[in-house]
Length: 190
Ligand SMILES: [Zn+2]
Image (cartoon, rainbow, N blue to C red):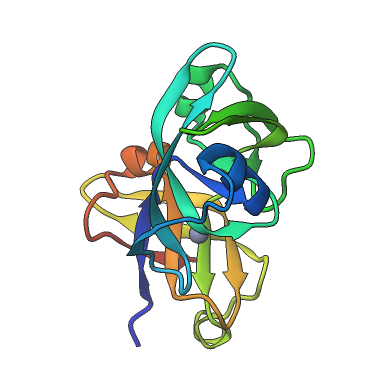
């Protein structure tokens, strides 16, 4: 059976809490669906924000929906250095002690005391996929990226849930390092 999976590049983005959506986009505002993402229920929004650090700012940063419990900003380490924040490499949602920033929208701004991370590279998969690959949730694996600049990434965390679809997610720094653009696949190497 085919043991390859698609590798998708996550560009810089933010997830917003319902509270922060209203602060940034106005009272009663909700996110506007633009495009479905590979993970079921996740979508890119029409809304854009500016992420402001001590040194510089990033404009036109896409908002991903749906709303989350806590606002989270996912940047590449190059982005983080550019705006002057020190983003730790974390799994999504693990925000304690992560970097602060300001987020500016058309109707207001929020200062988040933490929430800026560089997402830890990961593979989403269903329990059936995990069984097929012989891996389990939270396991750390190596993945060989198939490209003209093939690269083996270590420290890839496996995330298993029935609500996921099989796909590996890397950020733009990692994608550039591996030329993982367009239709790109990877496989777990042991
Ligand atoms: Zn992901």
